[in-house]
Image 1 (tube, rainbow, N blue to C red):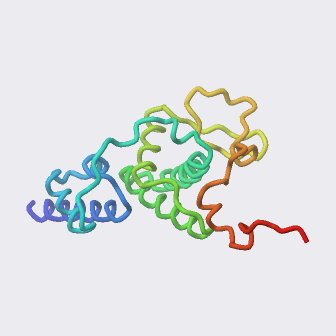
Image 2 (image 1 turned 60 degrees about the horizontal axis):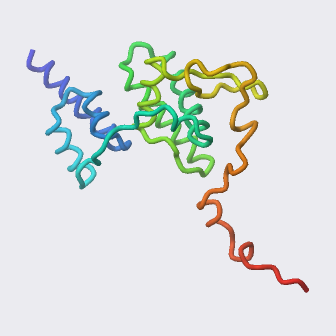
Length: 188
């Protein structure tokens, strides 16, 4: 009996370490492991060299509707659905971790920065499970994108097919311009 409890505790600690390394917030760790708050804080400090960030978790579905977060959320959710459907015997956190790792690999492959944190990805899955979010199919590309539950589905066009006017015009994009591109042009 004691061996089973030691094995279970080792699994919990291993899971907590994996989640912390992926950037999980303390609230996520508390929800997904049976370790005490004090133990999780000590583990977090040991791994990250600092206390876990304070503050509330994201609580609004609206963040997932803005242009870039919606694209990344939709990508993550598609990966998650595939993983969850093909690994039904696992606790919900396992497919989330696997999906998040694949999401990070995909984003890195294209040289982008990840928009979703592990905590946001976990929250996204919870919003789907609670019926607050759904996916809508784009009428142009047929891709499935994250949308509010009960949003109209007819005539839906995604942010990739119809990006907002300021899409992609971030400070990061502006800072990557070369000096020659930024220099004023002088008429000859």
